[in-house]
Amino acid sequence: MKVRTLTIGLISIFLIFLGCGKNPISSDDENDKNDDTITSFWEPTGELSSDVVSLATQNNGIIYAGTWGDGVYISTDNDNTWTQINNGLTSFYIKALINSQGKMYVGTHGIRIYRYNHSDKTWNKLNFPEPTATSLTSLASSPNGNMYAGTSDGVYISTDNDNTWEQNNRGLFDNEHILSITISIDQAAYLGTLNGVFRRNEDADSWTYIFDDDRMDLVYAHPFKKEAVYGGNSKGFWRSSKYGRMMELATSGLPDGKVRTIVIDPDNGNIYIGIHGEGVFKSTNNGDSWSKLNDGLTNLNVNTLGISPDRRLLVGTDDGVLRSTEPLTQ
View 1 (cartoon, rainbow, N blue to C red):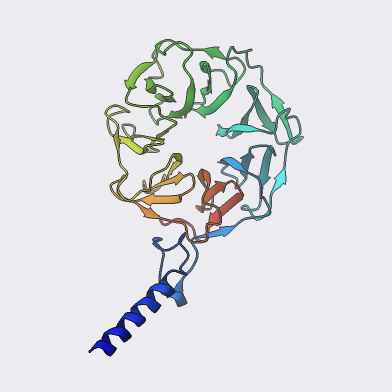
View 2 (cartoon, rainbow, N blue to C red; view 1 turned 180 degrees about the horizontal axis):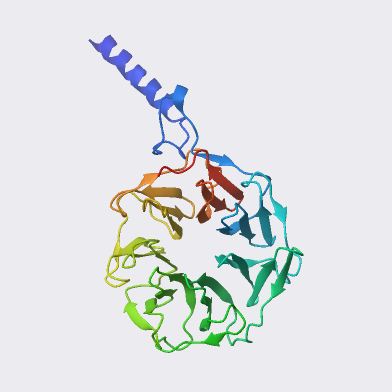
């Protein structure tokens, strides 16, 4: 019996040793299968190794990637190749990148906003007022084309196709530092700030303070549920089904870490989030549970997520852009 027990113990130790060699990045991914059927969820795109902090797409298949230090890149072939497009920019440190009514806008370090001119491949600087803020933090566009610019000293709004901008800080705290802006399908605007979350209906004159529990680095409106609003910060993923009020944490199955980016599939409502240093996670039940999507992800420092026109999930990391090997399911 002693010999047999020793043999079993040695076998157990050997098996444990073998298990230690498994890649920790993909050990419990949603798509783990037997060795002969494993297919990576992610694959690299064209040669782009910059620190990608924002992604935006157009319906014609064009994809834009904003970087921290290398400006903006464009792909016209489903992200197989990337071309740098910095003509007209005075700063290559991108803070925000959005598509508004088919026009591409970029906000850069130094509080400058540019609109891209496809005909001459140049960024044209907008007539943005000289702000008292020290930095631009975010851009957003409503379904009707109104634009919002968040700064370290409040919000600016344009209602005339980016020709003029007016500061509207009514209802905000003094020197309110805006971290994120999102617009719901009913045109309501939400702000993530150092002090929580504010909301403003399109026809309202001022902002309403609706969530004061914590700093909210990120806010995201559901693409087809006007009452659903989500948030992200160092505590994790937040959700509200009451127009941003009564937000609650939904972190079951998530590691500790700051939620840096959120994207929701407009076809089925599946939620994808990026946690810096931990990778990408997916929920099919509004955040009740999460599964990891890191198989093939070569850099876990996730900064931004997007969905390409051909329905590939895109991720921007500290080392470029990757895409899902298959289109997202309907």
